[in-house]
Length: 601
Image 1 (cartoon, rainbow, N blue to C red):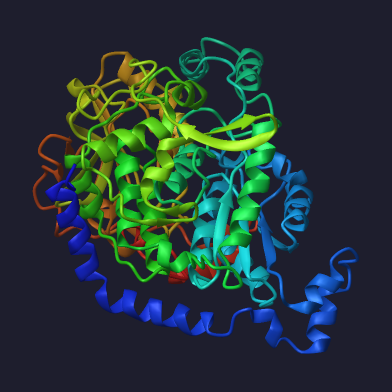
Image 2: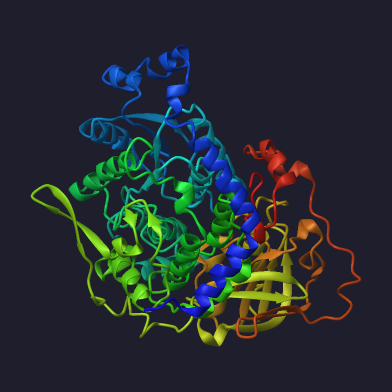
């Protein structure tokens, strides 16, 4: 099938917009590649320090004739998705030795759990942690002792941070290696119901705690389709995982086999082999467009609008928020995975998962097939699924049709003819809305505003019954320059409870909502943010706000708003706890959400 003309046009626009920065980036990685293998240029003293503890591998390392793989790991055992990484370095080193090569842990990066910090002050460091991860990974790779890398990360800011670092060291081949989702636990609809009942005061904390523990119950990624699992989808669509690696459960023989295969593939594509594949060449305009197509087809996390933009800039590619909206208008919604449906990612994987989806989108001309990937040339490689046969890892053709059309459908018979995103614009500014879980009856909300400057005040207003009416909840001074753009996911059950009572309700914020934004219409990532004296800083209680996903409007309907003096945020004293004071430099230098909300790219 020929490539869809709309997809081709968006790709060409990105290429044209990025021509100068992309050419500069490619020249930079070309110059870096000229000195491969880098460690052969290290002095003897440098190398002695690097290899001092590598008893089994010293001889191979000093010969400089076999590739040395650098492991960058985000392991900790507070993140369930990252706990399996504890044993990955030993597996990877074993795989390297079997291939006649070597591997070393280059360094570790921090990894926050957004589930732990939701609604807490620590969430104000979450987005900035992405830049810290990129910087930490850069420190790990700066030793110039590696011919390729594997990146161990899954969750929200970790994968984008690692990808920014991987792009910066784009002369190195690299493979991303996931851990997989935990087995299915408490059904997602039951968990959501219990959260709403707790917010409404109908049940106590003991019952809520039991439900949460039944949902998040073991090693692996949380099973709803939030940012972590959207990251994993993205890496397959962009060709940075081995095919079919995303959603294989931890602690299984297939998972271990894929981990070892990922390491060995990274070693095969170095400068020392005959299939050199620097990551900076894989990360091109086509691969980013493929990633956006996957985001829309699956109804993935809105966080990826920010992350993909930052990742692309690290590779010299400039994405615009309208690129996402234009692709959303072209690409159908093919999946219903919670919060867009009742199924979890294990059910999605069993129904045919990414191999079916990629195959079907290729057949409809909605993806670039002619791309380079870590697995080889052509996205067709990702229409296959991994299997173990007598202990040997092989890839077979994926299913030709969905095995459960309540979860996964063909692009020719989708859940919706367009993806799950709207780009909103009006006198408030620009924002986005994820609508894949929003009922059409709630696409338009026109109601008086109630204005807040912290989540705690919204919760207090809810408990006092102040939200029991048609209302647009405005939560401002949440942007990157103000509070580091925290997720406001803890407001989801509150606003869903208001909506369930029959009231029209929406959220407008310069903060984030993540992949779990749910059924309430939410205009998020609003720019200019309040800290930039954007119009959102001038909204007052009672102003009539119109949020319209159909006409893509974000408007204040009240008169004389532009002449108002913006509200003032509280001072820096509000940040003197929980480490937030250390991030002042980030708040002062961070870019807008539309530019990736980064202080470093």
